[in-house]
Length: 237
Image 1: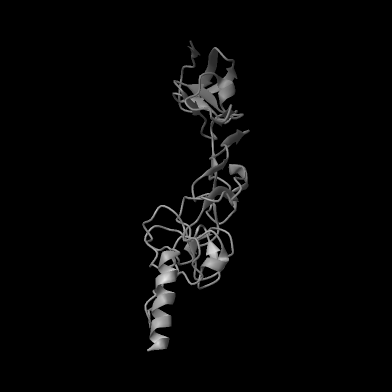
Image 2: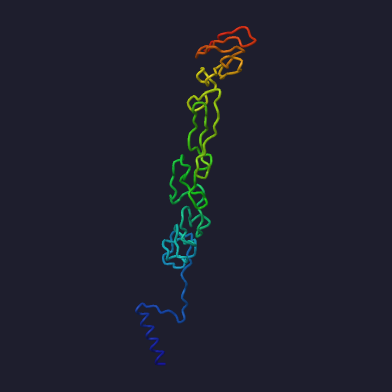
């Protein structure tokens, strides 16, 4: 009885001092479950699951806080992320055409190398097939189309075609022609077309069955081809 009285007096004294006594055999509550939709990361979690927001490795069960979430791995490498919507906590390649961490340098298109974006497979994307890497050109009597990237980092030369019987004018074949010099040697310009022909003419060219004996930028003087009678002079305007 004396012991019980002493206990009772002690409880009263503690209560008067403002100290609350826990009931015997009280159950220790586990920490509150972290809400992934909350506005901030957990403050003291040491065992957060993958996908939960974090600010440091010690907050995660995996020991890896990557891209602001607990991640299944360190997620090292270019164009990899652990915070992609719907897949938080999983280390996956960044989607094609994106580069959230600015890891990919944008090289000149002429190189057909990196275009500044990720390729969706965990690497920096190369310029796509068909991207122009060199302009078209025309030299002498050969026209070449623009060169394009092959999608694997190489610049493929454009297709070439002969301008014959015309010649190059600037970056393309000179067709239709305007003056005789728009045509290759041995050809002349007739109504926008470079014309040359049969070996039966001394110079190898003819017009309306008449062999050409003299050409200038304004007129063509002809003589009859074998089997014909009259020659003529045609004026070009």
